Amino acid sequence: ETGVTQTPRHLVMGMTNKKSLKCEQHLGHNAMYWYKQSAKKPLELMFVYSLEERVENNSVPSRFSPECPNSSHLFLHLHTLQPEDSALYLCASSQMSGGLETQYFGPGTRLLVL
Amino acid sequence: GENVEQHPSTLSVQEGDSAVIKCTYSDSASNYFPWYKQELGKRPQLIIDIRSNVGEKKDQRIAVTLNKTAKHFSLHITETQPEDSAVYFCAASIPEYGNKLVFGAGTILRVKS
Image 1: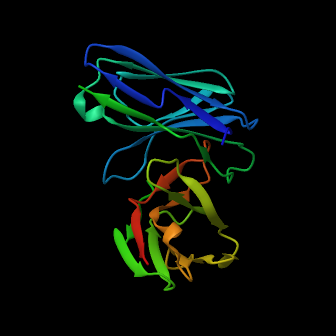
Image 2: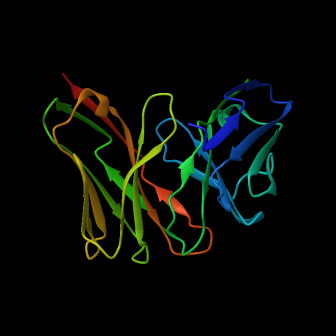
């Protein structure tokens, strides 16, 4: 599937590293999302961007910094992460018009923080 | 804020039997309820959704029911097959800016052949 793509698919980083996750959607959507998926926990919404403006930040630590340069691209910049940040990071997109539109997920980036 | 609870956390059924997964939500303003299936190592994929103006929706072997009064909705899978084995997530959407989805914790479904 090529609707929503994410790179890299796997990432191992040390606590002092800086890395970035990239998401790209090819669906013409105008809203994009970052989720964190940890074992035995519900999907946690981290950030929402609508029309390239951040509309939600769910009390995410500042070591996670999102960037949305245009409606097709979304980044998650990572800096001085902790081992508990190891998880699957999922990007999603949707078309906002009426507030009920389906979200489509990317394949995720499996992150391991050592 | 919205809270979504999902039960059971794991479910094992024999091939050909039915499986039912239930979710409850707390915010009566929620009006959109999707179900996602996530196979091992893959992305969550929408399998069915229901909006608050209907009580039931069916798509082949999959159906979803919604009880707005009781604030619960359920996923029904009939004639289960081994390829139905996956983690299933329910979610509820609040009609506020951002199309926010709140997810349940997931149900691991195992279909034994």
